[in-house]
Amino acid sequence: MNKSSILTYFYILLIFIGTAKVYFTQTADTAAMSVQKKHIVIDAGHGGFDPGKADDDGTEEKKVNLEIAKLLQGYLEQSGADVGMTRIEDEALAHTKNGDMKERVKLGGKCDVFVSIHQNSYPSPNVHGAQVFYYKESEEGKKLAELVQKRIKEYADADNAREAKPNSSYYILKKTGTPSIIVECGFLSNPEENKKLNDPDYQKRIARAVYMGIVDYFNEPEA
Picture (cartoon, rainbow, N blue to C red):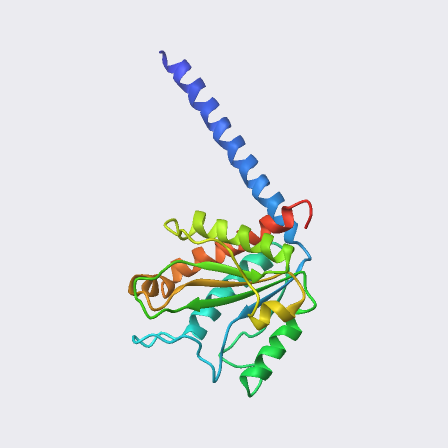
C-alpha cells in the first residue's frame, strides 16, 4: 500500500470516528432532554439529630446520603430539570422524626418524581448490594424503580443480583402520592461496600446511574 492510500484510509477513519462521536453525543443529549423542565425532588435521607445508619468506623448515613443527593442534583440540573432538595445541609426538617417525615412527604407531593437516597445496614457484614424500593400500589413507581435498579447494575454495581422491591409500609413511599422510590445505595455494614460508598468516585457512579434511570423513565412512552 502506497503512502497516498495510507493517508486516504487515515482520513476516512478520522471522518468515521468524528461522525460516530457526533451521533452518540447527539443521541445522549436527545435522551437527556426527557428530563427538561421536569420537577424532580431529591430527598437526602435523615439529617441533623437523625444520623440514620451508623457504622463502627464513624460513617454516618446522613452524610453519605447528602453527598450522593447533591451529585444527582447536579446531573439533573445540567439536563434542564427543575430540582428540589429536601435538604442541602446536615439538618432535619422538623424537631421530631414524625414531623421530619411529614415535611419530606409535603415537599415530594408536588413533583413529577420523588427520589429518596439512603444507605442500608444489616447485622451480617456479608450482606451487600444496592436496592431500589417502590410503593407496591404504584405502577409508575415500579417502573421508575426497575429502570434505576437496572442502571445501577450496569453502571455501578455489576455483581448486584438484587431486584427492585415493592413495599407497603415505608411512610415516604406510601404518602408521597407521586412516583416515588427509595434508593438504598449499599450496605454500610459491609466493610468493602462501606469503603466504596465513602469514595467520591463511586458516589459519582451511583448518582450517575440513578440519573440515567430517571432519564430512561421519562423516555418511556407511557410516562
